[in-house]
Length: 127
Image 1 (tube, rainbow, N blue to C red):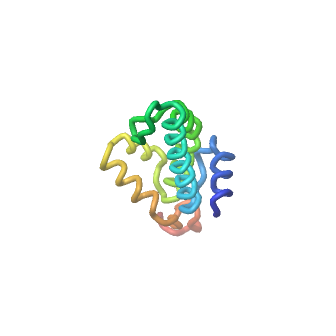
Image 2 (cartoon, one colour):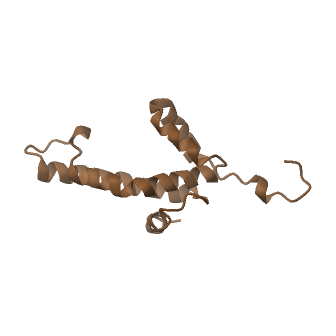
Image 3 (spheres, rainbow, N blue to C red):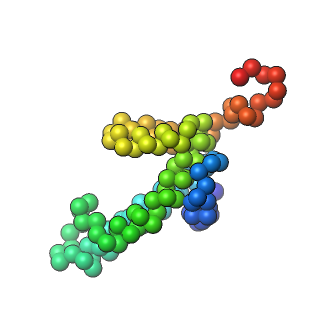
């Protein structure tokens, strides 16, 4: 999947928390999010800061709007990516376990699609 189609698909399926999202779709959307976040911080510092100084603490009005606008699509594509690796979407709550949770999520997001889905096995093969 390419950049524009990945971003479109993420916004079209922003209410879909079931299904799967492959690696390229997830990472293209993450690139879009980070690029937009950097642009919003630069715009905040350019328009709303008396001295132009870039720092993470200078997230202002535009950056806040960017994060709020993209919150639900980000969560939904993360859940679908975890489903694609054979895990529950609830594991995305590990984001709140600061360092270890982030490392685990990045590792899981980077894994390949799991093809040994029990629902796809023929009848008679032990689970």
